[in-house]
Image 1: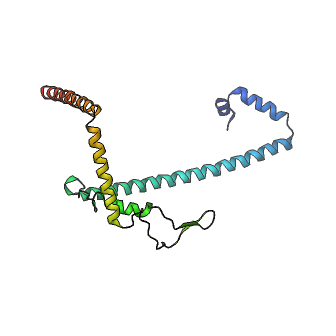
Image 2 (image 1 turned 90 degrees about the horizontal axis):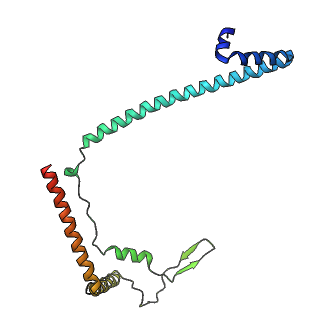
Image 3 (image 1 turned 180 degrees about the vertical axis):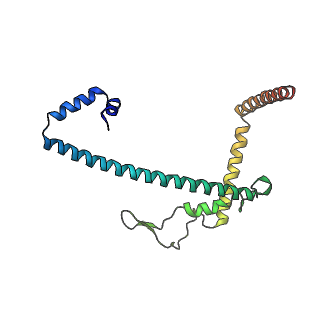
Length: 192
């Protein structure tokens, strides 16, 4: 770099300080500095080349990903997915059919034992019958029906209380207020 450009780039004070520092050094020390600078320059150039190669790879990957996304969007549009051609999901079982499956996984077992500190094992079921634990699906279904009946009776008892009547009156009052507010907004939108 010519002296004029160095003055513009670094500033005169920095160049003068550097020259005075270099003047006080021996030739061997200056050669050592030059070798270290050359190695640092080579390492930085190598790192720059690697980063530029990585940048090019990332650009190519970006182009490839954008092309893939555009292709997928075009293919998805061909499917014309919408409310008119999709199927409404339907349950494969009745509302209480899951109770039997759930009971099989959660029922209390007296056949479990600890094989080691971290492993538990289940033995084959013992043939002794316990009347308090339902074993068949019908028994579980019957228990479910009884639970629903008990809940219904409890709900009927709660609905006949004075608190329930107050709550229903409050609910009806708020529903009428809400209906009035919706009607007012609807009339404002119709006129506006």
